[in-house]
Image: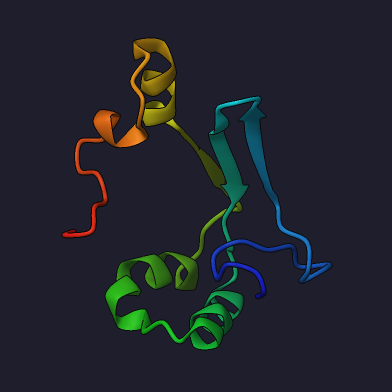
Length: 102
């Protein structure tokens, strides 16, 4: 299905610059990646995915006026809480869980 519009490797478009830390019986607890720092590549990703860049004007402007290559990570706090609180479902640990009504 292709690569997410925000992640990628300039040398090989099939390869992403990302990492996930997985724990047995728990799943992903941390995910990290590098962001696209090239405005042209970002615009191509928006077009390919059918995303309007209008809602991301501030993000595109950062690339247009210059940015350094950068990345970030996210910790799966809900999974951590589920494990250590012995709750049966991850939804019990989410501030705004996804349900059939939401």
